Length: 200
Image 1 (tube, helix red, strand yellow):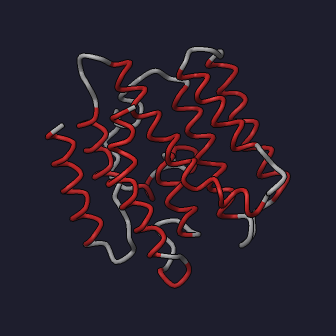
Image 2 (tube, helix red, strand yellow):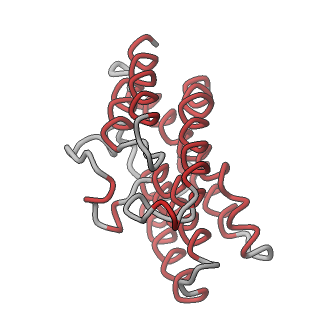
């Protein structure tokens, strides 16, 4: 898909120019729109949802390192696959994802050790919620261009995964996060995850 390749190339320029290793929401949105098959909304939904699944799987080890006995992220991944296959009620799944995130925050609390894992949990919950809506424009309907301008409950899955990899969000100073890990996540996203999602 020429439009996707062009959008990815522009995104790489955006990423390389960022001293904080940030791939902007604006660049990602351009890619997501290019990924859409306007003649097949279902295929577009499945491709984009699969992309989120790949992202959560990429950083799942961060959760496992902090909470080795807790398989909640796997359960969220299974729930997403069930939604993609129309094998679960979307309303029940959305409630399940919301309860999961609330319970995780209440149970484990927020500190320097748990924060990256909590970002993985946030990413997984967002993945499930977006999968409940079979809408290829779920992430592109608004004109937002900066992740930091979104409300916390509106953060998109790939952003939270990149933040988990970096150990902090975009607004945090570079000496408090792993910029190289963030940049590496986004390069994987552009070079491997998006092509894999489109092949799915």
